[in-house]
Image (tube, rainbow, N blue to C red):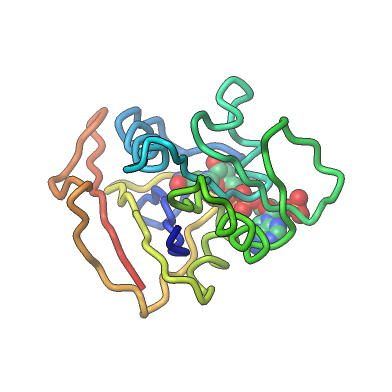
Length: 179
Ligand SMILES: NC(=O)c1ccc[n+]([C@@H]2O[C@H](COP(=O)([O-])OP(=O)(O)OC[C@H]3O[C@@H](n4cnc5c(N)ncnc54)[C@H](OP(=O)(O)O)[C@@H]3O)[C@@H](O)[C@H]2O)c1
């Protein structure tokens, strides 16, 4: 497995990503893109891992938790956090990545939020790709995507549509950056 981290996030014009422990918008096609990108593997015998902060974990509705067909990994400093069987917990991003890198059946590592986990990943030594959905509208948010370091440049990925998307009258773009 390559140790590249793949970050995936959706942010609105003010770079907001969350409000009251939830997403500020409901965009089914954007959610389907998230599911497809984080789940699909080239090798049918492998799966991907999704790394998330404890708050993002708790934000996932119980019926969708753990996220299916992916190894769910939760970052927390709380050694007593109770999670479902098969879900891994770590107290640092580095220890999580080290463990995942030692597993033969993991194809890609996806970092799925929230703010501090994205920041830790972008500022880490690991090569990173950032799949950022830019929602072309402002929403009231209390959680924000961190500043993207200047080491990131925009790239194209053949798996990612480049045309403007639209749902419920809201336009959005799938962007990809790499460092
Ligand atoms: N739009 C999007 O793409 C997107 C994606 C994800 C989440 N969200 C939204 O963002 C909000 C949640 O994000 P958030 O930033 O508030 O919280 P979060 O990053 O999901 O969780 C924060 C917690 O995770 C643990 N943590 C984070 N980084 C860690 C690290 N490097 N090492 C060890 N533990 C670490 C700590 O848990 P302990 O306190 O247990 O130690 C910390 O309190 C929600 O509103 C959610 O809906 C949006």
